[in-house]
Amino acid sequence: MSVRSLLTLGLAALPAVLGSPLEARAAAAKTTTVTASASTVTVTASASTVTVTASGSACGSITSAPSSSHTTSTSVNTNPTTTETATQTIGFNKAAKSLSPKRYFGTAADIPGTGENQDPYYMAELNNTKDFGQLTPANIMKWYATEPEQGVFNYTGGNDFLALAEANGQIVRCHNLVWYNQLPYWLTNPTTNWTAATLTAVMENHITNLIEYWGDRCYAWDVVNEALNDDGSWRETIFYEVIGPSYFDIAYKTAQAAVKAKGLKVKLYYNDYNIEYPGNKSTAAQNLVKGLQSQKIKIDGVGLQSHFIIGETPSQATQESNMAAFTGLGVDVAVTELDVRSPNLPPTAAQETQQKADYQSTVGACANTQRCVGVTVWDFDDTYSWIPSTFPGQGYGDLFFQPGGPDTPLVKKVAADGVIAGWESGT
Ligand code: XIL
Image (cartoon, rainbow, N blue to C red):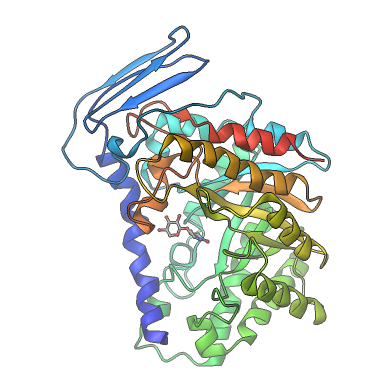
């Protein structure tokens, strides 16, 4: 792929960032009645109405007014007709903390500045530290947001995100420093003639500035995100095209220098997808780690994104042996962006059951891997998931959904029991 087409890619990502949560809110439910209890809940849905009835005693009822006919992938008719809901109440993070060594369970959140932080039901769950002990900003620390003009940094959104997490005592994985996507236009503008020297200086400045500014408020930084193609070759990003493969080592060297200059503890990660199972890409990622290590450049961990599809998730044994290949190099691993989407909507009852098994196998693999430090889901509520806009026709990938749409109660899917079972299976 040419540099020019890559540049367009970076730009094209922006409308998706800005648009989807607003659309989700615009897609507020049609007539919706929700009655819930602590025990088994059955959800029935049709294209225009949703009714949730409880088998036990009712404890709440919410009716939302009909809204516009505008529909998106979050509209109610993509929900399953019958949903078995979760029964486990211990909490995802509490279960993670009970292992030895302790792990965390966390979530990405696309705030501030999107619909999520205006949804009281979403926010109540995000602030529920029994479930979430760690947060990742889904967008607000990316390059387009943090350095919108060359050399002019905007920390406001990142600071707000950190403040929210810190108020809850949740740790933050900061995401990310160098990625080919969601770059500011000043960087991707095809008329700018970057040289290896000028782009290296820009990259070094970006990395140094953010690591030093946020310091140990970040538990970890994803220094480089998605440097590889699926066959294990270098992805032809602007950094690769202009600087060459050495951009990778330079990025980590720069990060290491910032950590040293400020005496920080922040962990430096490489993060990618399709490296959750053995294969060319996982091997290539291991070689990246070895390459840094052979030059005595700091790398503390590898993030396994884990964007899976129901029924196509690698087995727990496969994920464990893959994790072992990384931890055997002396680095931590973390599951950084877990979701398990349905390839069709609505999902079938069998797919919902399989989704539970799939969540369990990834969390179970982490539980059985001493140096797997934790699991992060890439948001926990289908209403705000990135999946429908990225994979049209697919969805239902998260642990909760809102049968009534935004601003209505969350329903915890049976998949959530898979998370608890996964932690509890840890040896
Ligand atoms: C996604 C966000 O969730 C979306 O809101 C945005 O439009 C595109 O990026 N891998 C990553 C994440 O490392 O940064 C991506 O996040 C999802 C895939």
